[in-house]
Image 1 (spheres, rainbow, N blue to C red):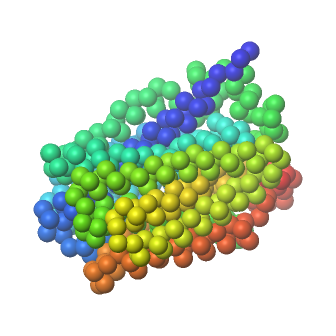
Image 2 (cartoon, one colour):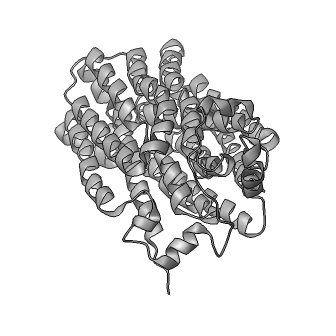
Length: 432
């Protein structure tokens, strides 16, 4: 019997959800110049507004990881998309900094389940040697959502105002929800888009030892006693610092410091995120290829992670160039190369976490990783207001990402975490 490919339809749904997720986040950065002028918002206030989303988003990651493992992905994602879509639409009706901050805090709660849920779905629906590609595909939605839709959003803002951009983009989540509820089931064996041949393939009967993913009752904070967890937590922090800085401030940087028009900045902002899209896909394929060649799965992932985290060095020449296009090219190399790591950050969690606790470790990683969302937008606003320049703000993520490369190389062990003696053989062997 020829196997179906229903698992890739599920990955595509995750990709679309991630794209919408990041479009909803990115509108603020694109609408920034218009909102600051229309509502008399200062650079520091705008930085606080950009950060407000992450106050709740990061704090919700711990409980969300537990919720995903208990309720399952189908219901969790449905509630999340409805919640964040309503908040995105509501942002268009905000007329002062106070209510806007409140809406962004609520939006952070709604978007919190996305990546822990994605991680759990990939772990349940794909065999290990395909998870890198799958994670690269769904995570590339971040690049599409942030950058490749920027000209459309900028065009909407220029013709109908920033308010309509929030209303229009916020409505997309409801369209996605129909397809999610129709096609997706928590367990592949209950799905109509998967036949027996594909189900056997997913289970790994022909390619890998079958592992039982019985939910494990463990506090996410228990993972902090394992050395391998720390490079995962810090690595996402580093990735997100660069991403959130660029997501919130890149259009404003091009308009204010490089003197581009908003429409032109919206168009050229696509370039870094196109490179990121390519990097995400390439990182997943490269790490999966190394696994097929016999590499330890975690070793293959961390090698690509470390290489990707070196690319932000390309930001340094940005401060020495006088032309906007050369600055954008350097930034594109940095973001695109770092995309190699972004594509497999979540696949690595699935390899390192004990089976049945992927959502919990993913939630812990996303909590620490998104603390950068508290810092990057505000710190950038303060630095720009203080020095009237983006130079120092652009150099900070370079050092942060270099430390992440060191962490992946020297501190991430090539084995799955075992959390008790009874699971020692099953979980450790799975990571070797």
